[in-house]
Structure formats: structure tokens, C-alpha cells
Amino acid sequence: MAWGEGNHTERDPGMLQLKLAEYAARHRARWQRGFQFSLFFLDVLILCALAIVYVEYAAGLPAHHALEASLNDSYINFASYHAAHRALPLAVEEIAVVPTGRGRADVVARITNPNRIWAAREVFYQFVTAAGRSLPSRTFVLPGEARVVAAFRQQVRPDERVRVELGETAWRRVDPARVPLLDVRAEGIRYTPLATGATGIDFVAVNATPYSFWAVPLTVVARHAGGVAGVHAITIERWKIGERRQVSLIWPDALPAVRETNVQFAIDILDPSVFMPFEGREAPYPGF
Image (cartoon, rainbow, N blue to C red; front, side, top):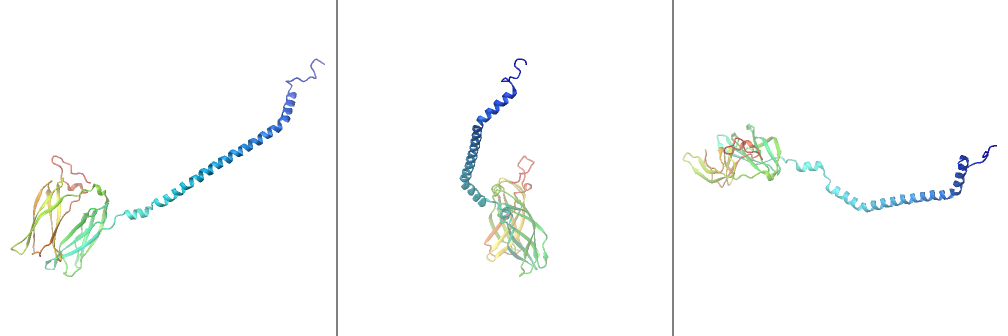
């Protein structure tokens, strides 16, 4: 046998396995204790994390309840919102009949817009009598405005109740802060009995706005103690900035003692076409 045969060195795989097995047997109990301690430490970490989550949850409960309460208070019911902000219907008020003779009469009414942010851009109306209907007419009513409308020489009995039917209405939402109040007025109103039995009325139409208008319809309503004594309608054309236009009208009949005169200027400021251009400019004023 050669030298070294039958002897095992440290590099022999068998000897390494024996040493590893011996080392594992000696330290097995320590490894088990280390593994158990690691499991215990992991359990502690998990419990700490759960405790932190619970504490944060408990601390956030009041804020969560407050948020729920605020949601209940500030919840938007869109159906209720739209119902509260929709355009309210126009109201017809003070329908009056002014006899003009021979079974005819002038009928006048006031159409009121109760809305603050909705303008009736176009509304069709008709006066309805026992003899039939007046021709369909249209007008506009700005927010919070009362528009006087009239139909002349209608076939109406003295004791008849006339009604006004409103047709389709085109609405437009507007910002009240951007709708200017136009300073237009009638000054020096004077009634004059004429020899023919008619009544003349004179006044000055004052345009104190910074705008000029192509055509402005006017409705003049004279009132006495019993209601409406007479109604008249004319149109002022090419009414310039700062102009004081003399206006003269004639009622075909004698009017009773007039206590009040209402002159309404129908200027649709939402329609750019009613404005005349500035001097030296071709384009009209922009709408509001």
C-alpha cells in the first residue's frame, strides 16, 4: 500500500460533511432559539403596526364623523337645485279695457318677469275676447321688468273679461350686474283738450344714456281714479345720445282727469342691433 492510502485529510469531502454535521448538532439548539426569537420579534412588529393603525383610526374618527356631517349639510341635490334656479313663468297682470266707441276698445296688460337672472328674450302673446283673438305679437321682458303690451281697436263688449295667452318663450340667463339701467325718461307731460273733442299730450323724451338707438317703441298709459283712461303707442327713430325729443300725441276722445301717466321705453339692451354705431364707426354696440 502506498503512503497515504487509507488516511483522510481535511480536504476530504467525507470529513467536511462530518464536521458540518457535528457543528450543526452542537448549535442546533441555538439556531432554534434564534428562529423562535425572530418569530417572536416579527409578531411584536406586527402587533406594533396594528396598534399604530388602530391609534390613527381612532384619532381620525372625529374628523371622519365631521366630514360625514359636512357632506350631509352640503350635499347638492341637483333636482332641487335646478328646480330652485329654473326660470319662473311670466305673470300677466292688470288687464284693462278702454272703450273707443262703436263696440271697439283698446286692451292693455302688463307682463311681469319675476326672475332675477332670466330674461324673456322673446315671448309671444295674444289678447283673447269673445269675438276672437288679436294678431299674435311678440315682446321681450328683462329680469325684474314689467312690460306693458296693448292691442288697439279690438271688438270687445263693455262687460267682457279679456284674457291674455302667452305662447312660447325663449329664455336667456344673464348676469344682473352686467345689465345696465338706461336713463331714459319723459319730462314735462302736458294734456291739452282740443276743439274737436280729442285730447292732445305733449312731453319731452330724454335720452340721458351714452348710447344712440335706431328705433325705440313707446307705450303711453294715462290713468285716472278708476284705472286706465287711455293708451297710445308710437316709435322714436334715430334717438341720439343726449337728445331731448319733443313728442306730441292725440287721443281721439276726451280723457277724464288724468292722475298719472306712465311712459315705457321698450329698449332690448340684449340685442346689439338696436344700438346705432358710434360716430365714425360702422359696427354697432356690442350686446350685454
